[in-house]
Length: 453
Ligand SMILES: CC(=O)N[C@H]1[C@@H](OP(=O)(O)OP(=O)(O)OC[C@H]2O[C@@H](n3ccc(=O)[nH]c3=O)[C@H](O)[C@@H]2O)O[C@H](CO)[C@@H](O)[C@@H]1O
Ligand SMILES: C=C(OP(=O)(O)O)C(=O)O
Image 1 (cartoon, rainbow, N blue to C red):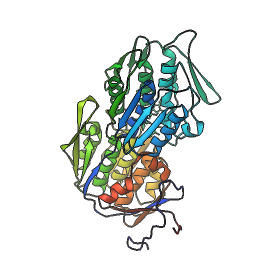
Image 2: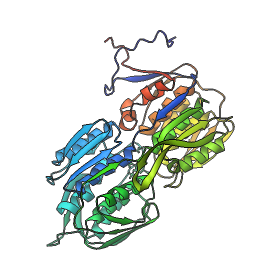
Image 3: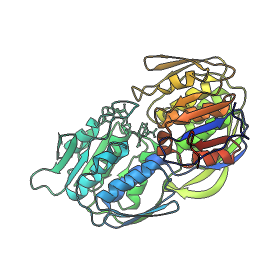
Image 4: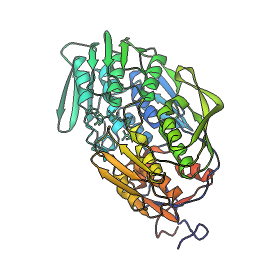
C-alpha cells in the first residue's frame, strides 16, 4: 500500500490530461488560506470590458484555465491583454466583430457573455452557442429573448448566434424585460447590453447573485447608470459611452465555501482571509445547522465595489449532523456548493435530503462518492443521504468542476488514499487548490501515473 513517505511524484503538472491527484485522508488541517478573486465575476467583467473603448485594469483576477480561455476569446476579437500577477490590463479600443472561436467557446459557458457587449458597442455580434455541459442542457433562450426585446435581430445559423441592430438603428433600445427564470447569465447579458442602449431598460425577476452586483458596480465605475442590482428588479439608464476604470474583482464565494467545507469535513479549525461573509450567508447557515461554528473576524481591509471591506472567516467544526438542503437562485443555497455539501453530509450523522433544482443533471458525483463507501441514493433530482461514520479512499473520476472539489474534500476525510482523475475540471475553477490545501497541512500530490520524470 502507498504511504505518504514512499509516494514518489513523477511529474507535477497542471494541464497534462493523464495527471491524477493523490490524496491521503484523515490528516487534520490548520492555519489560514487566502481566497482568490471570483471566477464567475472575473469572467463576466472581462466580457464587460468590451463595452469600453479605453483601458480597463482588473485586479484580484484568479489564475485559472477558464480565465485563460476567456482571454483567448477576447484576443480573437482584437482585444489586447496584459497580465501581471493578479492584475489584468484589457485594451478593447480596436475590436472587430469576428466570430469567437468555436473550440474555446464550446468549453466555456461564460464565453457567450461577450454577445451583449459586442452587440451594444458594435451593432453586430456572432458567437457560437456555448457547448453542452455535463450539468444540464443550459440553453440561451433568455439571453436571446432579452436582446430581441431591445430591438436586435437574432438568429441561430449552423450553431452560431448572429445578433444585429435592425435597419438604420445605431443603438439598442431600452425595454422592459421580465425573465421567466432569474438566470445569472441572461441578467448579465441584458445588463451589459443595456448600459449603452438608447433609453431605460428594466430587468424584472433578475438574478441577485453577488456577481451581478459586482458587474453593476463595475459598469457604474465606468460611467454606466445601473441601479437595483442585488434586488429582483434592475434598472439601467443607457449612456452613449463608458470610460476606463481600475477595479477589484470580489472574492470567490464558492472557493471560500469549499474551504469552509474542508475545515468541517476534516474536523479542523481553519481561517479564510479575503472573503465577504454576506456572500456566504446561505452556506454559513447550513454549516451552522450541520454543527459548525463560523466566526467573522476583521480582515486586511481590501476594499471591493460598493465599498465592501474584506474580512476573515474562521470555522470551528463540531459534531456533524445531517440536514436537508435545496439549491436555489441567490440568496438561496448555491448550486455551485451542492456537490461539496453532498460530500460533507455523507459523513454527517443521520439522514439528509439534497434537492438540486437549478440544473437537471448535477448529481453525477454521487456515483463516485459511493465508491468511497458513502450511502447515497439518487431519486430524480434528489440525493438521499444516510450518514456513515467513515469512508475509504478509492480511485474516482471528476465529472464537472464542483464534483471534482467534492471528491477532493471526500478524499481529505477518507481512510487511506483517494486518486482523483479528470483534473481538467478542477483546473477550470480553483486557483492553486493543491498548494493552498498543502499550506493547511493536507497531504496530496498531483502525479502522472507511471511517469518517470
Ligand atoms: C460563468 C457563470 O457565471 N456560471 C454560473 C452561472 O451560470 P449560468 O449563467 O449559465 O446559469 P443560469 O442562472 O443562467 O442558469 C440557471 C438555470 O436557468 C436555465 N437557463 C438559463 C439561461 C437561459 O437562457 N435559459 C435557461 O433555461 C439553465 O439551463 C439553468 O437550469 O450561474 C449558475 C447558477 O448560479 C452557476 O452554477 C454557474 O457557476
Ligand atoms: C458551473 C460552473 O461554471 P460554468 O457556468 O462556467 O460551467 C461553476 O462554476 O460551478
